[in-house]
Length: 319
Image (cartoon, rainbow, N blue to C red; front, side, top):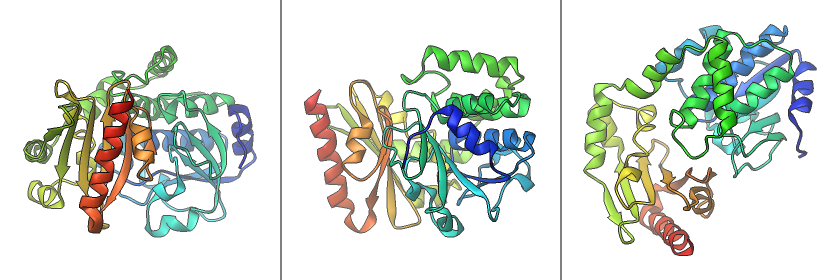
């Protein structure tokens, strides 16, 4: 598969009459912001466009789209956004598209290059790339598109606190604000509003935290039983993953979350110079230097957890 630049990606999109934009499973602000921003831009060009995901989109992102914007689209040009590996699309109806992806727009170090790739690993968020693509399409960024793009950039940078933030990240955000991004409401919804169930889940999860490797590593576990008792779901866990990294002396934190598909999702968060992506790649995962993920098999939990801790230990010893 070939690498392409922003101008080439925009030209490919312009040539289409129908596009279907896919997000990764358990969608976050960046994959959704990228998808719906590109969808809105395509519609301005007269292209029929929809967004599709294997999971239910959390209610907090409802301001990005309306019901007819979501769903499958036959005979469409298929694009993925913020999806480093087509296996991350998930299961169910979306699986039929895994081998039909024509264009991948992404910023992950671990991208598998499974389609024509617009891959800019230095970008803090996929929405930064989509911003450039939309400008290359000649589409004016209105308040709806600005809301989508700002959501992706702010959430993937921890409201501009993470080390992936660059001067250009701020310049793009400033332009989005100029074009009407509702940053007051978006920041409140994304960073300040949590359900009571979330607080109960956080309290339960904190009880499981254990430190190891001379206090440089912290591990936290979230079980399905915890989520059932607190009435929470996978999307409620997104803000919890980074909490153990806040412990003084901890350089890398792993949050291990039980899923319905007989696996555990590992969310790794680290401080420089620990490379989270390097650790997760050893277990078949990937991501970014300071935030990455992989899976642990339920039937081999202790074995896989030991591999994870071994990989973490190797990385800590190498720095």
